[in-house]
Image 1 (cartoon, rainbow, N blue to C red):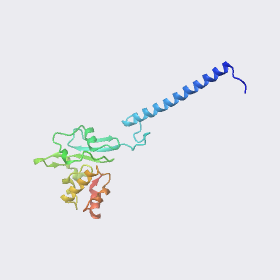
Image 2 (image 1 turned 90 degrees about the vertical axis):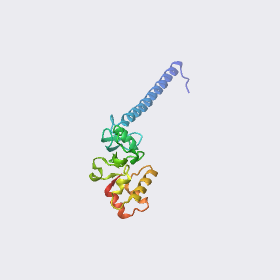
Image 3 (image 1 turned 180 degrees about the horizontal axis):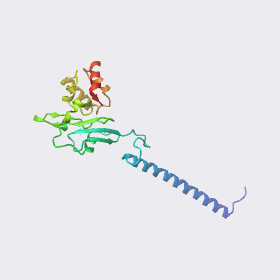
Image 4 (image 1 turned 120 degrees about the horizontal axis):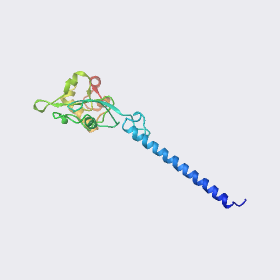
Length: 196
């Protein structure tokens, strides 16, 4: 094997250093692009909120109504809680009955969060006739709201709320078939009157 001259060693060394620098720059640029894309998509304003590099689920959109400062429809990150939705809606109004809802329940896409108002004698009342307008939110339904559903009495309504609180919220109405006293006929009533 022929011996390398001093000039050849310097040239080969310079090429090796240049390749290392180009590789390091490419790796650093790729990592920075992933971080900036993930940061941009985290708030849902600069990138498509339904896509992220980390593989997380898309955002949830919820309707917050009742005794809050700014009722409306809000987009929140997947995995958010009822408390996060209330905060996004400007917090609760002075007449809010927070004890009537489970603020730790996870939000589901399309859910309506109703923050009831404190009525006469401290009784929680739904604001704007929420019961007649559509399904009741399973994540925030009070015992009184559940009691309005055909086939559900106050004891079963209390069992549902207790089951929901023990399991950190419910993602589906179908989970209620695990509550004692809820049979197939009651499940049909629940499906028509409740939403996740």
